Figure 1: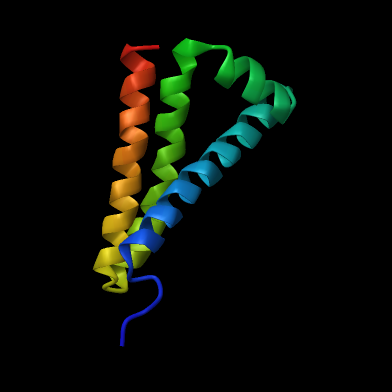
Figure 2: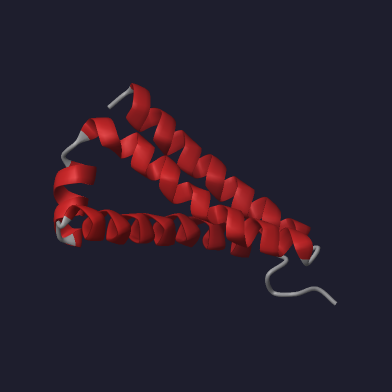
Amino acid sequence: MTSKLDKMGVGVLIGLLGGLVGFVIYGVYYSITHNVEFVDFVTRIFLKNKILRSPILSLSVLFNIIPFYFLLNRNYYKGARGVMAAIFIYAIAIVYYRFFS
């Protein structure tokens, strides 16, 4: 019997949301340690500072290690493949922001 998590589309969705959760976690951590509000982190540090955009996205995507290994250990290979696909989608954005922005 296959699980709902063992679908590539679900894995892609989990991976995309995982990057977003990683961004929020890093933003909250940065906000607390540097005494700035989260909105200031998003607007001044991420959106307006082109140099830091790529490294922040790279750190955010690292959060996807958790759902990837969760799916992999449960033998949900299609779901894990979807998370990897989402990581490659983020990688395209990271390369774009690093070299062409």
